[in-house]
Amino acid sequence: MSKDSPALLTVRDAAERLGVTPRTLKYYEERGLVAPTRSEGRYRLYDEEDLKRFARILRLRSLGFSLHAITEMLKRPLEPVEGGHRFSTESLQQIRDAIARQVEALDARIETMRRELKEAQKLRAELSPDLDYLERRLAGENADQLLEQRRNAQTGASTAPRPAATPASAKPGGTARRAARTRNA
Image 1 (cartoon, rainbow, N blue to C red):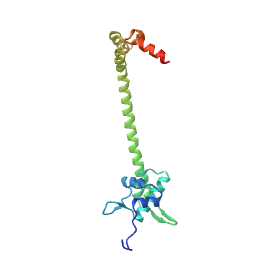
Image 2 (cartoon, rainbow, N blue to C red; image 1 turned 120 degrees about the horizontal axis):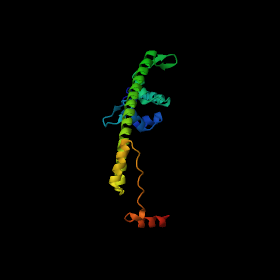
Image 3 (tube, rainbow, N blue to C red; image 1 turned 180 degrees about the horizontal axis):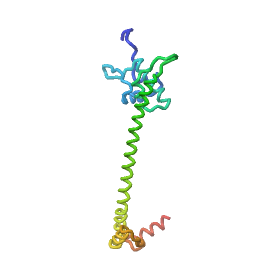
Image 4 (tube, one colour; image 1 turned 45 degrees about the horizontal axis):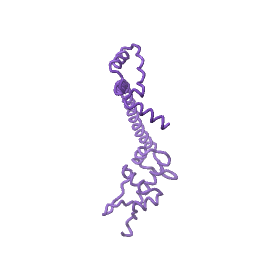
């Protein structure tokens, strides 16, 4: 490396210098926030500009900005002002507009999900009586009585009382189960 070329840091060295993990740097790269150069062996190499960009990302994250908002901010250049660099009013407006569009899109997704949830709840309410019927049939209840109860429930008539559960002793193996529960109690 010649004296004129800038120093390049490996992911480990860059992470150590910034006080983060190498995985953090790789994550920001995966999100498209930074694009380091690569060595011939395909290792990530970071220069001073990359480190400044990472430092800016980390400052914005520490202030609570989302990665979407940071992405919008990084699209706009900082402008020199007395004492440092800041966004111009125009840049701030563009960032605000971009974030507002993202929020609107999320609001639309939320509304769609609410509709889908309502439809799923309606379908669940429609399926629940069917599941109840099948479970009661499998438990040995009389099919004719159950069907009559379903017809009455669908026509709005008062439902017939649910037949009492068959005593455990009348079910196959019921006495053995009851005796086992008594011993285990």
